[in-house]
Image 1 (cartoon, helix red, strand yellow):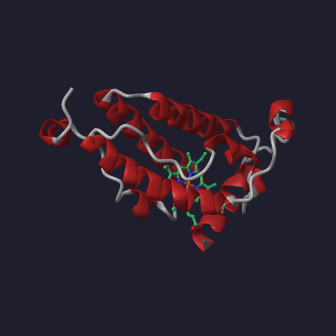
Image 2 (cartoon, rainbow, N blue to C red):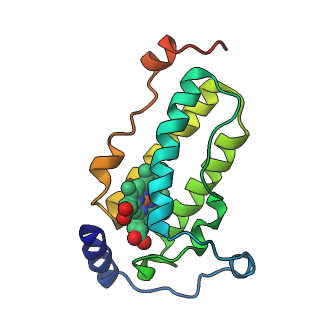
Length: 153
Ligand code: HEC
């Protein structure tokens, strides 16, 4: 992902590096086998699958890996870590994933799904613009789409 790396380095060189933010809690959890870019590909697939599941009113959402391990994964651009915006986007995304996993209300699920999608986009606009075109293929769950969906409230 050459574009990713270039943009990452460019944005890093403009930011003051704040490295000290690694929390003790994260150090205790174990490091995942997946690299962040592999997680990202799985996240894309999960989003597309869960979009269909929400529309069908499925019991369970599908998540391919433990999203709470994302902050511990190896990354191509370690300079992003510790930056306030990066960390807050990561945390927000993980929080939303936890909410989506727990929710059984399809309208609420759709709202959380749209918020997750917005977080994909906002983090990528700052840290990694290359995949934005792919992320664009994850379509919002609009009111119109929800009105036509199969699930019953
Ligand atoms: C916290 C910021 C952040 C969020 C949120 C985020 N991404 Fe990423 N994404 C990244 C970074 C950084 C990389 C580069 C990963 C690396 O190579 O270390 C990346 C890489 C990718 C890639 C390229 C993977 C490859 O093959 O190299 C895709 C596709 C992607 N993200 C999709 C998504 C989708 C879909 C979402 C939401 C479901 C999402 N991202 C949410 C930061 C984020």
